[in-house]
Amino acid sequence: MGSVRRSCPSPWGPLPRERSRAWGSTGRGIAVEALGGIRERVRPRGDQRDRISSWPFHQLGQHLAYKARRAGVPFLEVDAAYTSQRCPRCGHTERANRSDRDHFRCRRCGLAGPADVVAGVNVRNRARSAWAFVTMPVPSPV
Image (cartoon, rainbow, N blue to C red; front, top):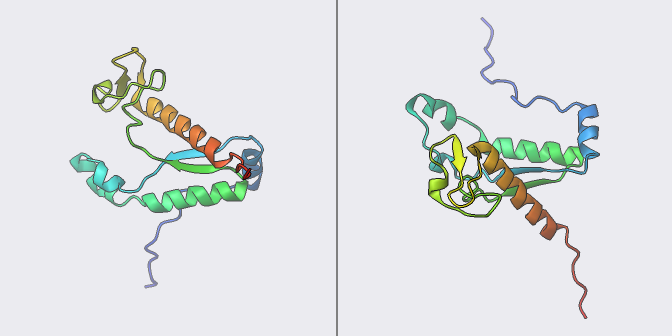
């Protein structure tokens, strides 16, 4: 009997050249939450523990950064603190804005929507702010 290969192929697959060229010409970037320490922060249900504990979070972040760099697309990791509790409309941050895992409703202005979408908007807004500082010209000494 021959040896059995015990590794699985990359779940991300190759980046087609035509797609990477298109991404580089959009003038947009990729922003993700910094995934460090996620295993300590996430409390999965019993049936999810094995799957989540084996996720290669660091590898995913590195792979995204690599693919973005190859395509000429800006890539930023932003602090994930309170992105799921902060209202992108009025800025109010409160744990009660998240009544459960899936829903967001701001206690101040009433903005409501899927929690993941609201968190994604907050990540985008943080990345835009960070990008402004990253690309800001260095002031010349007077």
